[in-house]
Length: 119
Image (cartoon, rainbow, N blue to C red):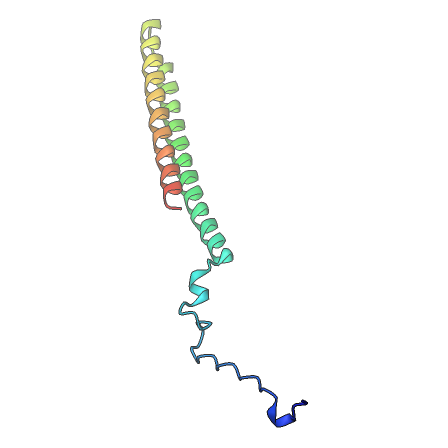
């Protein structure tokens, strides 16, 4: 028996999506869940540059202080009246330089660790 047009089953209409703006009907806002690689990269670059500049300025100050001390020691070495005085000045200069370089290395490591921990 042939069905007439009025007897054919009609497709039911799908329910209308909910009018939730910006949530895709799932309950979360997709822009807040997905990291923005451009902004993240820019922030990483800005943080890296800040720590690089801080480390560079600290190194420049260290070189300036060391150069002044080295010139002072050379001047003092020039005024020595005996080899024993010269050796004493030279040993003191070497000892201070070694301590200064160790301290500077510690400061540089602290700056580097500070920059890597903030990421």
